[in-house]
Image 1: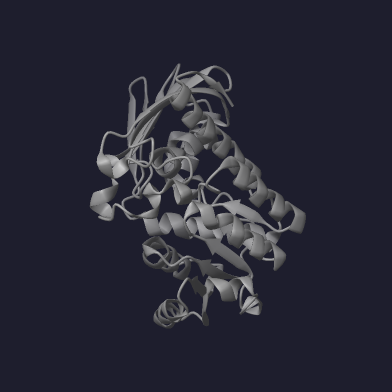
Image 2: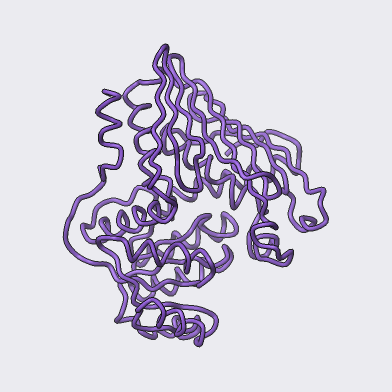
Length: 358
């Protein structure tokens, strides 16, 4: 790959297959992420429109719909009853993890395409049921891995495939944030295992380096060794306030990851090969910066204006492109199940202090 040409085409939409059509969305779950990030992202897309907003409170849904020009605001119960189903083509599910299955199931019954936030569900078993419901209904299902449409990540994948770093030999990923500073509520759902699933840090943050490395390197995990601890009282109900794990990827390539919901914000993914190195730092929460080194070559590609909202814009437009053209969705439900099996194995390894096959 010509490095100059790669930089020149940094923001290219190499996935795009159509220039026509619109996918109308019902957004399920009106937390801060949906309201502050997803709705503005959809407003900035080429092929998406928000027409229905769904919340536990009809009043809240109608209020947000009024503020953002959506046609309908309805309750969760009304959604399950099929209200306003003629007004949308697809659903975006951004509820706590343990509710994904029920909303995806209703969408499948209604014949609607599904874009579901990651992780796909609270457990691997429930994620399997979600995928099967979509397959039985023959509806498009995409897991919302926005990093797969992040230009820096796509360019990194191209560089690896072109041999820029030679043969990949090891990888390192980190994703940390101070959750209780960001959301100062010890009773929030991310700290409730009944809603979050196996834990908090790996489910919510560790999934980023896991999936992004899988995507760039095109290798899946084979086994894992992990350690976890939760010394703080606020994290007593979850096992992974702090977590570290080493995944053995296909081809004997180790991926070492660290993650925590109680640490300084830091995101990075480093891929080291026999001839060069690619690093994303910051990596996972907007403004991804690509650092390249090979021999005497040093380059830094910083898409300063490519914010988190725009990452979401690309994700929504990619999904719409696939729905409109009936083309294959790469991060589909089966792709997401590999991450669910991996996260399950990480927690099993930490609990039993042993290497676990995936």
